[in-house]
Each structure stands twice: as structure tokens, then as C-alpha cells.
Amino acid sequence: MKKAILVLGMCVWAHATYAWGQTGHRVIGEIAECHMSRKAKKQVQKLLGKERLSMVSTWMDEVRSDDAYDHTHDWHWVTIPYGKRYAETEKNPDGDLIEAIGRMKKILGSDTASGEKKTEALKFLVHLVGDLHQPLHVGNGTDKGGNDVKVKYFWEKSNLHRVWDSGIIDSKQLSYSELAESINRASKDQVKMWQAGTVVSWAVEAQAYHPQVYDFRDVGILSYEYNYRNWDLVQAQLLKGGIRLAGILNEIFG
Image 1 (cartoon, rainbow, N blue to C red):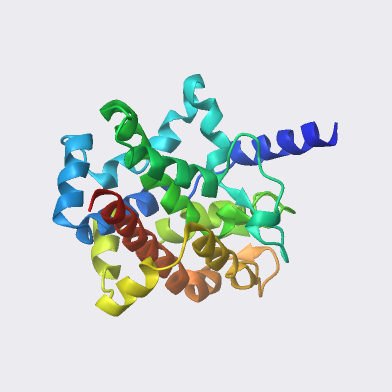
Image 2 (spheres, rainbow, N blue to C red):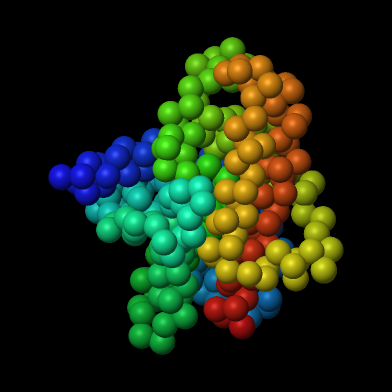
């Protein structure tokens, strides 16, 4: 019975979760294309045709309304309770963010998967790597990734998760291409450093920003000052997400 309740709680969180919003996900896809090898770009183009990573990056959110993709709802996030390692956590039977990224990588690197299956896996992967870099998609198991943290954002009712998905980014009123161009300034050493590590270590890194994310100086009222203190982190996570996505695709496709 307890397990059933846990799974139900997971599903409720998943339906309320939309990482980065369209602008953030497209920024990550746009930046990834700038850091991909020629071979990787060729293979990606072969799978996507005339579509770009930036535009397919939101596909996983768009298919939420299709019952055929109900099984993917829990892939958008992962729970790692504070003080535990991912390997020690109780795993979601429907999969989670870390597990799904690993599975999509295997499909893309497979010699037997069909082109259609690989195209779908690529669309999933672009979105999932973006999700991984939104700090509240690596939850602590207590508040549904900030969805239960009710706040007023610029005096409108909201929740912490929504503020990080889209509120802070949308407040800048930049297009995804404008934002991508403005932040894509990583050095070669930074690219090498950020692409090192594993999906699990990147998740742990994202969760390590929780003290900053949950720091409200005006309790429950978030506006200019909160945006100011967190805008650098938002930009850094978007940039890392794009560079790491490129690294994954370069590794898969050569």
C-alpha cells in the first residue's frame, strides 16, 4: 500500500512539472548545436531532417497530451533525498530522469535500433538533459520539486518550481536565440570541465544549488531581488546544459 501511495505521489508531481519552459529548452538546444562535432551534426541532421535541436527540445512536453506517452511522465525528474546517493534511493518503477537519459543514450548508440526509434530517443534526450540542469528537477523528496512551495511571484500566485521553469527567464523578455547568443561564451577549459563527469554527478551538482534556490529574503514574495540573485545561476545552468548535451552527442556519434 505504501508503495502504491509513493508511486501516485510521483505521478502527481510529474504532471505538474515543466522544466525551463520553451525558451530555456530551446536555448539549450541552440547552444548544443554550436559545440557539436561535424560528425555529430551530420548524424543529428540525418535523424531530424529539417528540424533543429532547439525546436525539438520542447517536443517531450508537447506530447504529454498524447496517451501513448503517459509512460514518460516520470522521466522529467528524479528524487535524491538529502544525505543519500542516487544509488541508494528507491527507484521509480516507471523510470526517472537519470535512468531515462541513460536509456536514450543506449538507443542512439545502438546498431540495431531503427531510425524512427533513434529520432524519438534524440528528441527525448535533448529535453531530458535540459531538465537535469533545472535544479528543482532533482528533488529532495519533500515538496514535489518545489511545486508545493507556494509563493507570490511579482505579486501573482505561483510556486517555486514554476518560477524556475519559466518565471525568471520570461521576465527578461528575450527570445531563445538572443539568450543563447548572449550566454554562449564558454572557454575551451570550461567546456572540457563541464563535459567531464557523469549524469549522476551533474544531477548532484544541480541539487547542490538548492540552498540558493530556496533562499527567500522576503518570505513567500519573489520579485526583482530574487531574480537578481539567481539570474547568473539560471544562465550558467542553461549554458552547461547545452554544452553537456553537445558532449553526449559527440560521444555517441563521434
